[in-house]
Image 1 (cartoon, each protein chain N blue to C red):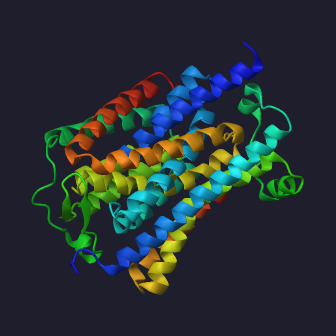
Image 2 (cartoon, rainbow over the protein chains, first blue to last red):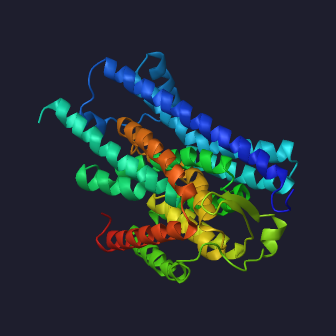
Image 3 (spheres, one colour):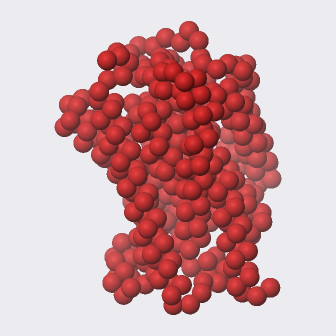
Length: 124
Length: 286
């Protein structure tokens, strides 16, 4: 083993790559499903594309999904995409904390995770 | 024009811009907003805030899509990314949560533009260089084990590298975070500059690592755009899908490219974005 490449880097890279792959594929499928559902009920005009706002409240999105609304499913897909990098950071934290037992990097990743979550959910 | 024809034309324009944005973004580590924002605003008359909202989502798509490839191929330095993300995320929160209402965006655009154009100088100085020479770990880099190696498909061999200039890189990353928090842009260019100029890592590692990081910064910044209703769901989907296709194509190209060619492409983009930012600052936002 080369001194420059520790096995821990490998575990965290492997897990990160998988989280990113799953997030991208899943969010794309959900977004396309939402679009397909919207189209099945009539076309989307350019004017509507430019004006239909994002209903960002999770409860509103959930209610829309239960009603089978395409737009709510699209919004859920966008949320999945937005959460993909954050889940990647959280998964790295788990690897550093419990697989590698690397305290320094576990602390670094949990700080990044909390700051990013705060930005997405509350601040600004 | 009929409604249907109009919609198809619209989709075609979005698809084209997003595809090119995705390719360029994943090659250069910058996301893709540099292509998508101008096309959406100038040709398609989307409001700049909504175009930036779409571009933030596209940055996350490029970062995740291309990132999954670069991380798997070990070009991304995950430790560098994680460590520097603390600095960027703190800067982004300060920018979005506090500074956004208190500083003049025009002045910040000008400052940003000047910063980019000035950083062209050290990049020009080593424009033809394939790999950085005589770089040794500084103390923080050794303590955090930031040095690593990757397999270079262009050179056909493993490239081991060391990392320097960590205090500088932390400062630059903080600035990158503040800029993206206030202006709502990924500021991937600034990240590449920190990797390339301050830390002196090979160019491929530098672009792959900033590609990996911009997704996190963008996700932190995306909340503001969601809450202000600036992310249009039906616009975001085609952008995200085509940007992803572009991002995967970009990874195929980037890994086979030489570091010096990649640096030349980056320098060109840097010049364009620098001038774009200066003009936006002088012209009052657009």
